[in-house]
Image 1 (cartoon, rainbow, N blue to C red):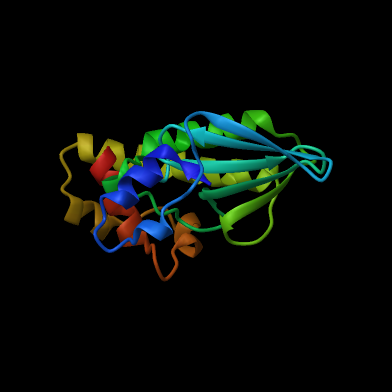
Image 2 (cartoon, rainbow, N blue to C red):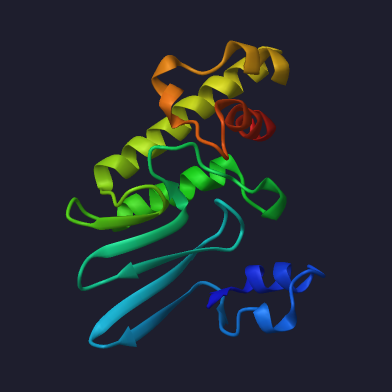
Length: 175
């Protein structure tokens, strides 16, 4: 099960065998009724990619955000697959509007979470994006912004795949 954009992108990749392609795709969303549960599979237009899926398990109030939440880490935004920073923030805002303080969030990366931590994640993206965007508008080059770095409060958000330097590059590209 995947968004149609995922199947199209994978089908264009010579390394992906036809039997590995998603067999069920959707455009906007799909509801699945299973074992007395209602699962909402939702597509958010632009975020990590242009094919992000989020699953909300209605009765237990659990949401799996996939790569739209890297708990306590800088996210990976696949700009080559239709993702961008502003779209990512919009997607997170949409998801935050759908959940309440009791919702359990299963992020794509990191520990099980909640609305408060998801809001802090959005704040990090917004603050770092606005900072880098302002520096770029002031004429700073990417190398200059990397040398300046981010505020110390974001020092622990870098990880083996998305370092602070790589996150700055992502932000600068979309600023």
